[in-house]
Length: 124
Image 1 (cartoon, one colour):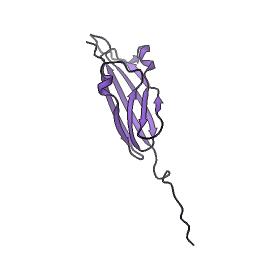
Image 2 (image 1 turned 90 degrees about the vertical axis):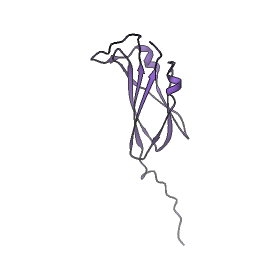
Image 3 (image 1 turned 45 degrees about the vertical axis):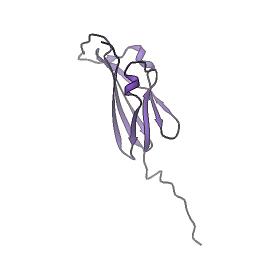
Image 4 (image 1 turned 30 degrees about the vertical axis):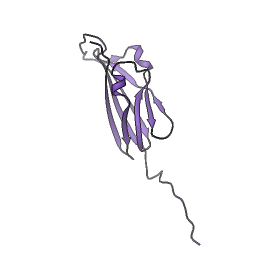
């Protein structure tokens, strides 16, 4: 008698990497970008990346926010199982949050997916 072994493909299906850049600006009505980036205003520290898979539990990640005086940019990386996802930001209250988010993306096995999101604050 032959036995049927149900095999899982987890080993052959490695996680992919999400590399994301979120830009929020302008942060002041009249701005001049500094040559150096510094820490973003403290209000941005409460804004986290929220990643929701098509099935499964939501993942919340901290974002490293930096300000150049004109806008604020945040980078983060996540290792995710292959599949379809949506990126959102928690505590995102700017005008452009509703139109720019959520951002859909797909992770392929062993691949890096680069995501760039630009959010307009509405400040002029």
